[in-house]
Image (tube, rainbow, N blue to C red; front, side, top):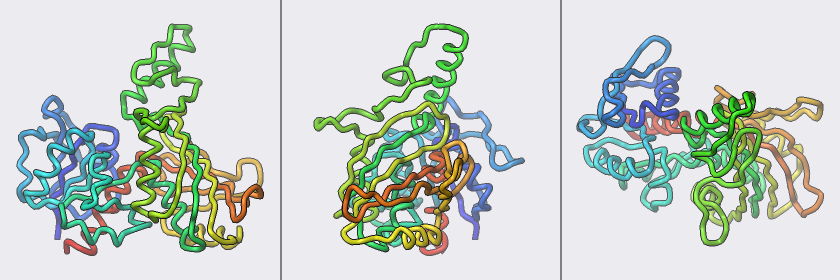
Amino acid sequence: MGYRVAVVGATGTVGREILQTLAERDFPADDVIALASSRSAGTEVSFGEDAVLKVRALNAFDFKGTDLVLSSPGAKVSAEYAPGAAKKGAVVIDNTSFFRMDPDVPLVVPEVNPQALAGYGRRHIVANPNCSTIQLVTALKPLHDLVPLERVVVATYQSVSGAGKDAMDELFGQTRSIYVNDPVKPELFSKQIAFNVIPHIDVFMEDGSTKEEWKMSVEIKKILDPEIRLTATCVRVPVFVGHAEAVNLEFDGPIDVEEAREALRSAPGVALVDHRTDGGYVTPQESVGEDKVYVSRLRQDPTVDNGLNLWVVSDNLRKGAALNSVQIAETLVSDYLN
């Protein structure tokens, strides 16, 4: 059986990646509809290597008869259109932050908590987690199964593509300006991003954390274990694609590094690349276009009881967004919608 699939936000960076991923993975779709704002209606987007789809206006589209909606248009747009699509019978897989902490909406990483999809019918909406959370919980799941985690301390190094195409353009434009000795004027970012790092992603909250840091804390509890304590410092770095995370872990009992290494080697969605030589690790640039979450620099932390350190890298547009959404759709099709 082929499905009717709509991609909302099809002209955006993540929307284009979703279309590419659907084509690459030969998703069982008889019909794929590209939707975006009315100003983008009539433009064309690629679907795989050869096919081209003409974009249709979201505000004029009737979702009746649509089986799956993969949505990445921004939280305000999702809040407006996702419930209506669900009421028309579609299952909406939403990549924005709007529904993630709704208790009736599963928050899913298929390699970590596919069982949560059993609750998709409560609202016919499934939430895709934050990109930095997805790669973190994918790496932590096999270790948490080995010995339960108590505390996670993470510093993220997040690429500008996590803030969209305009952010990528700003990094490019600022870099060019510096090389030709033109003035640099931050617009999207609060400070210069080219040749700099900015410890500020999303808005500030009352306790001094940013919302990005809060998201990681609450999402890991919903996905992996409500007892895990997490503290994060989220940093934007002058990289176009690919997020990295330096992670410190504390477990509630002894954990053997070699057992941890073996658990990571056999974990779905994870690639352990940890050679204690020059270049024996993965960087964000090397993760671009790849589906795996890469773990490197695995070692004991001698400063705490039962501690490990590791380095986690992934393509934030693929596993951190598009691929995870498509994997959710694949799991729904195989286990719930057939």
